[in-house]
Length: 503
Figure 1: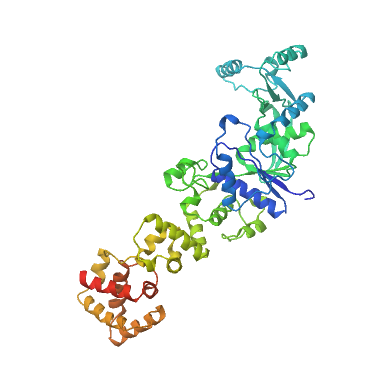
Figure 2: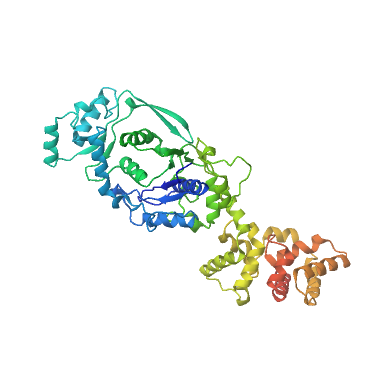
């Protein structure tokens, strides 16, 4: 590659950024960084009727949260701006006129009523109406009208669109980095609208002009744009411009059944489809996912590194990524796998950050916690003991509430199994040992209790399971002596005394 690699992610601000869009942005970012290039964000807002307030900022916030920031775009001018198509609209008419002058486009004055008539007429005859070489001379456009008639209509201010003149009887040879060589018969293509009656270009014209002016070298986008590749290549040819290399990414498929992943799938199965919360749809961030987990699982959706490796840092992804290893077929979305990734990153996450997040969680619960158990240092220690069993920070309370509050009830099945006739007496004897133990550290506690069990010729089964039951309230949690050491001597002893009384 002699030219500096420049790629763009060009979403429309018509709503929240779908997780599929995030993956497209990620693949663009990885490719750019792999080749020491630039990643550009361009806002494709030519369709002003569908513009949604706040959507552009949502896109920017999503990319930043996912740790895939753009090098150029709104607020980051790299000398190729502006980066919103609505701010560039004065450019496009000029290029539409160039195509008309070169004979590659034409004015079309057809009304919607007239086009509807032709469509219905074709349908009645069992045919499909296509606005192309076959019938364009029968319609109202600058190809069927004289120059005088055309100019008169333009002068009178009649509404028009500008259509691309698709050549007849031509075989297009296209190339896609992912899908290889593609052949298209131009007779199957219609004359797409390039410029609308409202004075705005369509996506087809605008993205070609912008990609050229911004010196985009590679267009990496979703496969829904594959049918447009023929037109886009023809537009480059018509302008006499060098086309970028194209790569069309496979769809992200639903977890179950056929079709691409949708918002409805997420709602039905209880997983996010947006990076950040949008209205009533909870995002990955708010659900408790780490951004590293999101980028990691998205990278493996449709791309295969060629190894068994599943966990990648962003730097490792950049180093390993190649478009040649992107799959042609759709990648099935697995909600359980996304949780698996998050659980992994939970283990590597900084305990202080996790503790701070958990403290906010506890605050929201409005619990009346003891002062000695409601501070950063204590909560950090709790987190270090329970996080290996957690997928999200919101799991911490369920996994470790006993670190803060003594059990108010005990698991019935565990009581029936573990609390025997002699258990109260054994726990009473154990109390004496614990009351006399000055060093209440985990290691010393374990040594003292195990030695006491041995000296009294007791089985571990008579002591350890009941001890866990009275401290925790059920048969769960990390190493019991770690728990006791953390909650402290007084709390441990009080919990045993309470259990002896009530069980």
